Image 1 (tube, rainbow, N blue to C red):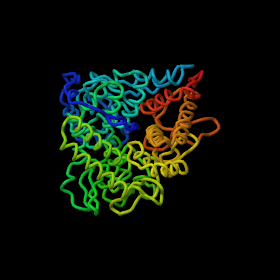
Image 2 (cartoon, one colour):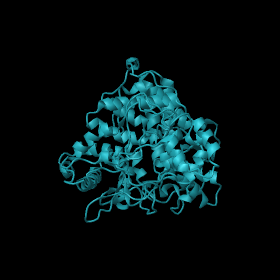
Image 3 (spheres, rainbow, N blue to C red):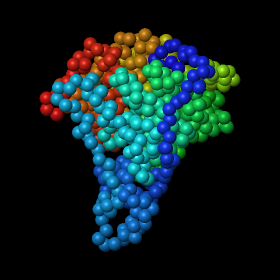
Image 4 (cartoon, rainbow, N blue to C red):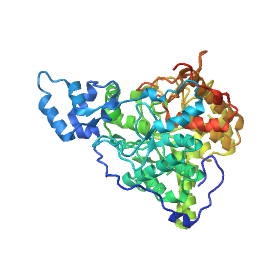
Length: 542
């Protein structure tokens, strides 16, 4: 299977299906009850009274004893005059410890050395799954982003893997490959992360891109993952065949012209458990039914862009309408998935299936060109299927069709100009040109968006802009590393005179670590050994 940045088609043979995939035995079936389902009014009381500063803390706690017994004790004791909820929680739950200092480099260590040394720090082991916590067991070691994010994340991991490969950590690549296959086999899809409260949604479907990376670095043949690719596709397309024009079901939307495209979705319409209080307060600011707002917030989290003006009217979070929007990047990734299933099916001798998926990919390609390509804007734009109109503002997801090879050369040239004129900042490529206070808006830049743009532009020979973005991003990461001896989740792209600073906005403080920044930066450092960021060293005092 070819990597998305390659124009070559893979050559497979049926014998590769016989190559065994190592799968450690002994992974216990997961208890999939979420904290809200398990602890009921105790959960609501803890979250709504702000026992912890971060709403994610309680849902990641491990019970000390059986949850049913803890809930029974709570119901018995909560009415007593001297009852203290915070004391009760700390007596009956093990609170996760966030080791932020572990991500700070030793003085004088180079940026490359720092990243190479972080992989073991960010690795988690399958025997570290507390009884009846929200953590879903995995059979192999895995790499987490860092900070408050102490679990595996779906789309983050693809960009993290780029760095693992450059650091020579093929052991972790192999483990991650088997973990994602396990998640698809066990749950029918790859959840947002390996937590019970993430099971109701996925994230941008990049498993097909991962499979190309696995093959490229000798982890496994791409054809080995064909069953999982097909099963993930079924998850994203469930109910599509029964849809009538201008109707939707879960991830699928049938347009009035018969076109079929996808949207982000979450199966629940309750507050996100990891952001319960925040979601309740957002819903209270809206005139819509609370359940509708909760569904839209959850779908926004499924997009990976949580949150952004992409999904909102007038940039206000209470106006979020994620499920009404057909995103450019999501449909580009599913196009790539359809195309790769077709290629691998043909290599496996499944001609009928190959023909079907080639036709599906072509129909999606045509629909994207009709609805998501905007000639006036000179760019791919998200489409509001409920209002039958494109979203007006360009965002960095416009590079995804270039990344997967869907764009024509002329479209790629126009997208490049739109990115350069509207989103390029001193420190790299911005997510949007809108300033709303949400973290996936201006002034922030994110590692995955740099990578999609850099490789997408390279694919069409637009090297000047691609290398300019790469240079600016490395300069940004290197500048903050030299001053603060760490790598962070996101960066402000308008650099002050003192150098780069970490990103702003969102629901939680800036996180250190950080998985996908490490991965993209490590890959770019390898590609650009002459860049000054390769000489960046941690500050003398951290």
